[in-house]
Length: 316
Image (cartoon, rainbow, N blue to C red):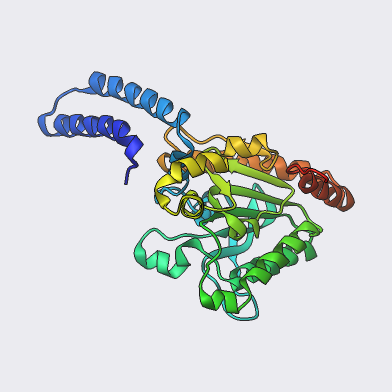
């Protein structure tokens, strides 16, 4: 699948594929031509991804070929043991979590999980958790606190599931409880926004000591389409809404919401899963080492200060 602004990139890639196919069928040497096209492809990809509009950034963050939580865990972690259930209702497959090791350091890894096929998306509920998913996540965070191990969360969701059943089972209360408990959890917590960070559904895994965002990920209180529907009574103004919401990683770094941007390969994370995962691993290892130097009191004090410093207000 390609996005509209990637048409130039796809065109050159198709030319390379045709040349390679011709070389294989006719026994021709096309290495020089292919090399020229590959250099052109790299340059056009770089220019395209350096000049994305906010709404285009949103589309990249939602790209169905982008790596998801379990893809990162497979590449970054060893000794992965998935844990299930909230001990109250059921196991929500839109959130996965369990013990793992990152470069020998034991962590509790938790994240939203989307599917790639329609069958997988129905199983994962398109990455939109029910309240039991957030209660499972909190149970695992508290287990990590009990054993003095850090928590790493991977955020990638359009938002919490807004269905009647989810509301009846306390969706808002589950999210609010996570916010409160994460704010005072006595162990280091790091979050990485790997795709779409939507509303309270993302925030319920995002009250952490460090918030890192992949270069083309987004984080917002509402989707551009939702904002457009409210303000203009139509989703047609999503480009304007995306710009006004300031959802990109660079915007959020400027506002002090995000602490660090993890660069993506040229062409986005969906173009090179292994390279992206390596960059995330490097960042996590470094930040885990930094947080490990702090006492629990220092950690909690810094966490409170971080969130108190976000935003501005005026006293009347």
